[in-house]
Amino acid sequence: MTSPIPSPETAPQQAPVRHGVSLRVWLTAVLAALALMVVGTGALGAALLSHTTTAGNRLVDGILPAQRDALRLETALLDQETGVRGYLLADEPALLEPYERGLADEAAASQRLAAVLSAGIGDDGVREDLAAVREAARTWREQFADPAVASVQNGTPPPSLQAGKDRFDEVRRRIAAQQTRLDRIQADARATFGDARSERDHVLLAVGVAFLLAGAALAVLLHVGVLRPLAVVRTASRRVAEGAFEEEIPLRGPSDLRALAEAVEAMRHRTVAELNASRRNAERLDRTAAELDAQAVELRRSNAELEQFAYVASHDLQEPLRKVASFCQLLEKRYGDQLDERGAQYIGFAVDGAKRMQVLINDLLTFSRVGRVQDARERVGLDGTLDRALRNLAAAVEESGAEITRPERLPEVVGDPTLLTMLWQNLVGNAVKFRSPERAPRVEVAVADGPEAEVGFHTFTVTDNGIGVPAEFAEKVFVIFQRLHGREVYGGTGIGLSLCKKIVEHAGGRIRIDTGHRDGTRIVFTLPVAAAATTDTVAVTAAATATATAETGADAGPHAPVPTEGSPR
Figure (cartoon, rainbow, N blue to C red):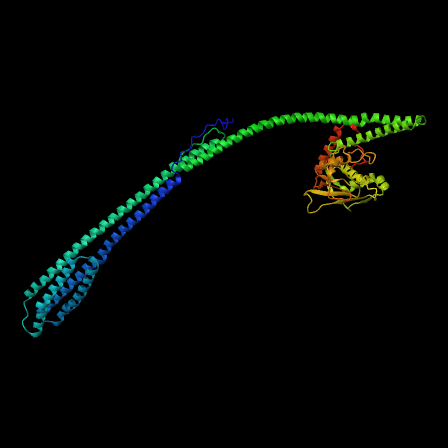
């Protein structure tokens, strides 16, 4: 059941849209916030990574190499002390090799440790410890090791080993102080590196959580600001599409989505208005169809009356005329010697009027039967129809001495052979009839198909060298009973060209007078090209023609005789 459609006047009006923040502004703000988060977290992450890297580099590149070189320095000094003690105890020169090697190792380790301390640690206490170790080692060598080696080599009594031990204990104490400071620095650096790494991990975790929250907020925004309003509009629009035209489109969401919903609502109002208008038009069409049905009934009744009139005209009206003409002729024959000249003239007038009335009635019957009785639709070769027309006009052509020229072959068209014969006979007959008294009539039938011809039609011309038709009367001559000359000059009923016009237009073509032709008259008409008609089409057309003929009544007689007088122009 169709739901009622509210009219545009009674349909509820939507509240005016309050334009607020649009979805574009919302998304721009969210994207800007995300961009700021990305930039901020990127900068913070870079700072944390830099801090962690710096702490790691200080530990790996500075403190650990310093500890390693400090151990090498300690080993070199212990080798020196061991070498000197062994040499003093055993007096073997080979035992001085550790002492000499320790000197070289001490120099190398001391140099590397100084370089590392200058580049990476940044603690002056370590450099001071290194200087104290060097000074203690130098004092041990100058005050004990070098004099002790020299005394053994010279054979003099060496200093006591206890004195050397006491001197070297100062070196050990300085080395221990240096190592203790390096261990403390290493522990601090490891703690700093661990704190930096822990801080980095916490910050990165916080950044990840922040991005997850931002993504969730964006999803909620899209759901609340876009998806939900769109779903509401889609649901309402679907109900409207299913026929619930009274359903209003809700206005929700950001301003641009509300503008979209407002446009859909305006479209609904327009659709409702158009549907109301179409229903009113349908009601008017129903009334018009009922009126047309009534007119069709009246038209069938009128056609029946016309058929009855044709029957009466062909029999009942012509019978009194034949009697009037016959008895007037008998009166003239029997009592002609008793009548004066005026009486004989009156009888002639009566006979001539009766005969002209018979011709007029026959022409009217022929005119009325075009499209009713003669209504065949078949392929027709125009050569045969023109031949029949010329045979009917043979006496008039021979009497006037007319010259008829025609193409070797005329095309085929679709139409009724009898009607097309009438067409040629009237056109050629008019050309012969309305000839110029100054020259012999010459009639040319031609096919004017060319680049400018209408698609689907053949164009024909009938040209004569007769008296012609003035341009101002080019349309008037096709009106029934219109004459341009008196009956005493050119006879006829004034129906010929109107009959030609009806035949051509019934076939689907057009006819006119070429006003540009000055030497005589040229009539141009078109007929449809013969399509590839099938046997079924011809059979249906023949059946329709037989039905139309049967409806006119068996008493209507054969086809009306083809008029030979033509229409005066």
